[in-house]
Amino acid sequence: MTSNPSWGEETSGLEVAKAYAQHVEGKNILITGVAPDGVGEGTALAFASQKPAVLILASRTKQKLDTVAESIRASYPDIDVRVVTIDLASQASIRSAASQVAGMIPKLDILVNNAGATYNSRHWTVEGIEIQFGANHIGPFLFTKLLFPLLDEAAKRSPSGATRIINLSSHGHRLSTIRFHDYNIENKEVPPEERPYSPLPPAFARVQEDGYMPTIAYAQSKTANILFTLYLQEKLQKKGIMSYAVHPGGVKSNLGRYHDEEMADAISKTSKFWKNVDQGASTTLVAALDPALNVPGGLYLADCQFFPSADYTKDRNIAERLWHLSEDLVGEKFDVE
Image 1 (cartoon, one colour):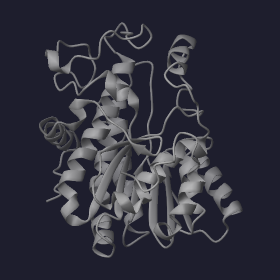
Image 2 (cartoon, helix red, strand yellow):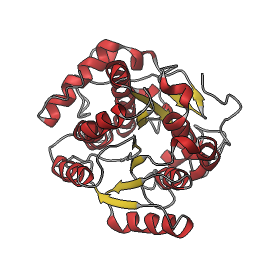
Image 3 (cartoon, one colour):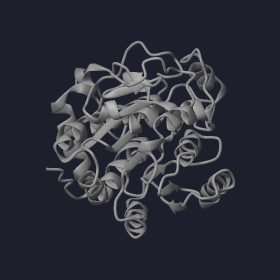
Image 4 (tube, helix red, strand yellow):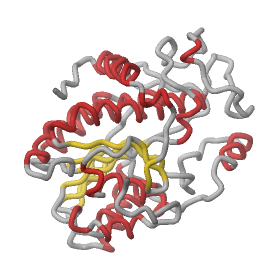
């Protein structure tokens, strides 16, 4: 259970940060996927409001990063804000970014894997992985792996459970588990346990001429975010590091900028309340800061509270299988023992 059960969908990220100010002040915090008018910006502004030691913003586009950094400096001029460019669809870029971060800070107290993307047609990462699985899961997996020594160092200097890894997911995860037999979404035959939720709304059930299923690809990646969290949570608790997955809610942002009218209409019906980016940041802030979460009380949060996720996201065998697939796709082991 969280510390404040009265918080919900309308709660402000700034309000959460203020309530947990002592858990932000002096901390080193990194947020991926930071751009103007997005959840990443709302999250960064909320953290910045309570005097972190170093706030690192990481994203693909330098100009967008600089815009957010300048906004933070204008509102909170004493905050040490750094920017790092990272393309989560390129493992070379991820390695370069992690190296830059390691040169900036001796420890990392809070990592927020906020970045996420949706696509209506097939795209590939540099390494030839379907881009939603590759950029939304494999990229953050590798980035977290490379930053793990900094997280481990923070945990040694902090109360057990205060060092956090937060992974942004979505209620959309309920539309598909991991398609181990078809993770690149080529519409191959998969066993019954890997088939998507049925029946799907027509817009979500689309299959492109090349076999690509955009919504299933996105859903698979969001399931992967939760299974990654499950594995981290179970393996890292003894090291004093906690991990949670969050659904930010329906947020008015640029995430769906590539959707056509039919898809945009279908998505608009998935939420009764659409948040601004500050409200969209609040659940991340709870997951990252609430001291009641120093010990695991759940896996997945939405609207600032724990929320049930699909059964397959809590399956340790699937989580372990995904972990090993992820190691194969980045070409190295991620040893958290």
